Amino acid sequence: MKFVFDRVNLKALTKELVALRRDLHRYPESGWTEYRTTVRLLEELETLGVPVRFGEEIHHRVTMYGLPDEKYDRDCYQRVLQECGREDLLSKMKGGFTGCVAEIEGAHPGPVVAFRMDIDCNDVGETQDVGHFPVREGFQSLHPNLMHACGHDGHAAIGIGAIRLLLAYRDQIHGTVRIIFQPAEEGLRGAASITNSGALDGVDWIFGGHIGLKLNELGAVAASSRGFLASTKFDVTFKGRAAHAGASPEMGHNALAAASTAVLNLLAIPRHSGGSSRINIGTLHGGTGRNVIPEEAVMTLETRGLTTEINEYMSAAAERVCKSAAAMYECGYESRFMGAAGCAVCDPELVGRVIRSLKTVEGISRIEEDFDFAGGEDFTTMMSRVQSKGGKATEMVFGCPIKAPHHNGFFDFDEQVIPLAAQAVAKIVLDLCSESDAK
Ligand SMILES: [Zn+2]
Ligand SMILES: [Zn+2]
View 1 (cartoon, rainbow, N blue to C red):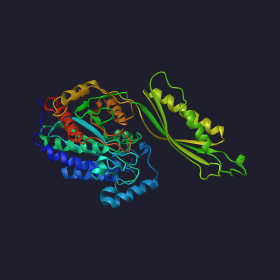
View 2: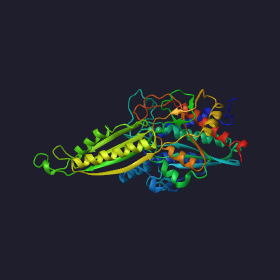
View 3: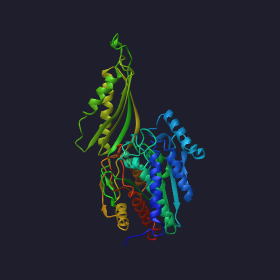
View 4: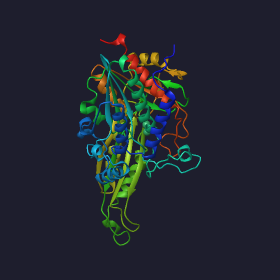
């Protein structure tokens, strides 16, 4: 008893979704600067006649974590103005208010079902290797040092695909479908702002999904995830005093030495016996010249833990290490919170229903009940909010072959996952909004 979306030409839809994905891939945008991406989505939704909210009204200014600096933001905004015009739409997003929330009103009353797709790219340069599929097909990134290396271009296309399928079956929808295109997932920055804006109010069921990861078989789908790592991201600035390195080194306070001392000791934080933990210092920049005692050093780091407590243990230890290293070299120290997410547990009731729906989707050959996520995902913020109000949540994984690890310049995924995941999402929504569920 497979369900067939026979009101839609799936072949034609697949072609259009792949084209959309490739277009987004060519113009990747980092968290909070997804201006063009949002414009593209708004244009698609407008064509489809789907009401959509965007701009400041779907954000909560105070919890827009890890915004880029103003100059970078301005440059991105100007670039997009040149790329696509559409100042009418862009002016509403100025200052990082990217992403959008679409809503399909079903023909009949019923629950509110939400799904979330993230849309940002990574700060990674895409390879120019001719063997790389996007290069071969001519849709590689046009933006230096930015790349969709996590598949969020695919997520956006899946979201639009699911919307198109659902619109064809609107007469069968008992309830409301809310689709959240979330900015700034990388670095766990965007979910809190959307959540705190009230965009999830009234949601009875919410689910999200990621493609690839360690599930690398097309047709395999995990109905839920476990092992989300709680994570905290922060930037640390060490402030010293510059001095002549030959004539008066004793007058200087070496910020780079403080930072380097911190790096080694951060990696030496004793691990927690309660479960897995991680720490990474991703970047370190310092100093201005060979013969100058470095005045400033800036590092970006993150901690993770299997539980919120373990992550808090790691981040508190990290703060202590940075502070102590700064003191050793008589440097100042400043830590800036850039993003975070906690853990969340998927609801068995929703997972059971998702599994039942997945069984009816043509092309899904293997269903896993849960997937060991072993990473951070700020969708947990949305899950927790919906759960705290009595709703149910789950995070799925759509299996597909990938060419290189996520966040790598050679990353690429099998585009056939897009129509498949779109159908899975649409079928889950249709089932959650079926007549028998209408209250
Ligand atoms: Zn991702
Ligand atoms: Zn990622």
